[in-house]
Each structure stands twice: as C-alpha cells, then as structure tokens.
Length: 115
Image 1 (cartoon, rainbow, N blue to C red):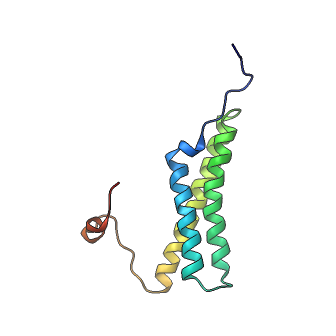
Image 2 (cartoon, one colour):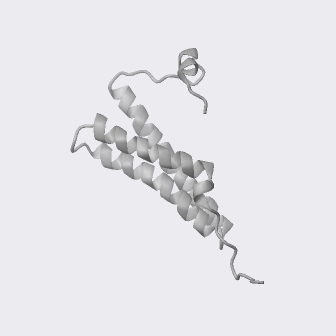
Image 3 (cartoon, rainbow, N blue to C red):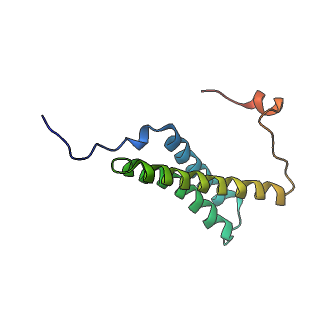
C-alpha cells in the first residue's frame, strides 16, 4: 500500500480541451505557413497564442496536484490566449474582405461533418 504525499496530476492528453487546443495549434501552424506572407509578425503572434493555449492547459493539469487555484488561473490564461488567436483569425478575414460564416447558417451546417 502506497500513500502518496501529493495526488497524481490529471492526464491532460485525455482532456477534450487539450485535444482541441492541440488541433488548433496544428491548424494554426499550417495556416500561418501557407496563407501569411513570410516575415509577417502575425505569424509569430498567432503560433505563439496557439501554443500558449495548449501549453497552459498542460501546466494547469500539472499544477492541479497542489493548487486548484493555480489550475484555474492557468486554464484562464489558455482561454485568453485562444481568444486572442480567434481575434487574429477574424482580423485576417476582415482585412481581406472575407465574410465570416455564422454557426447558425445552413450553408455551414450542411458542410459540417460530425464524427
């Protein structure tokens, strides 16, 4: 029988929010490399915001063993980073005069694939 001084941290890879953040990072990396001009500062900012979103979920999960308060703070940092990234994507659309599809639009719903 082993009594641990501290509980084991959660497995962040099983968290749905981490899985989504990882996919967002991968998509953002691809998007920046293929759709933004080389040397554009936005590339670094977008990739860093996506990375920060993902990494803060990992850090929050690790911190959960000793402090729920720190876990919540780090998850909020992740949320803020991903929101910053969303604004960068919206800026990309607006400055190129593309329209953003609304989730409720039937066109978007008809193209959506549910796994």
